[in-house]
Image 1: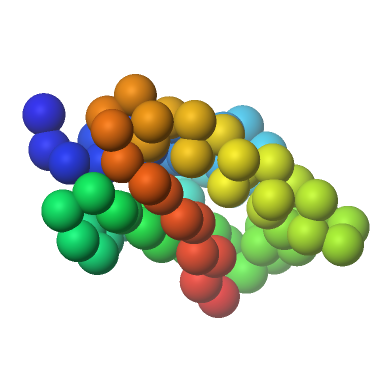
Image 2: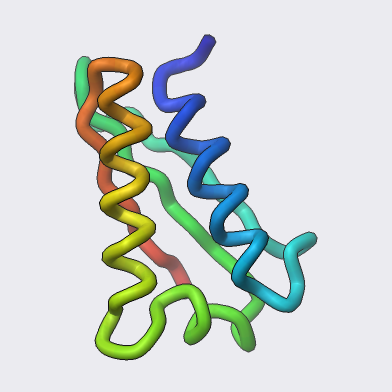
Length: 83
């Protein structure tokens, strides 16, 4: 299993459930060190607002869940939303 694979799967699943265009969701894992990964998320432009949510609440919830998933692999995780 590649480093950050659980994080990638969890983030992809959650984001695809939120958006109107799930086929346009892309999640790429960037290894930032031996025990840290960042999930870079991109969606259709019309969906990004839904993923971030009011005052960033949805984005923060996704980050929290990604960190919990990362702990399964003994990692730390961050999530970046790209437009």
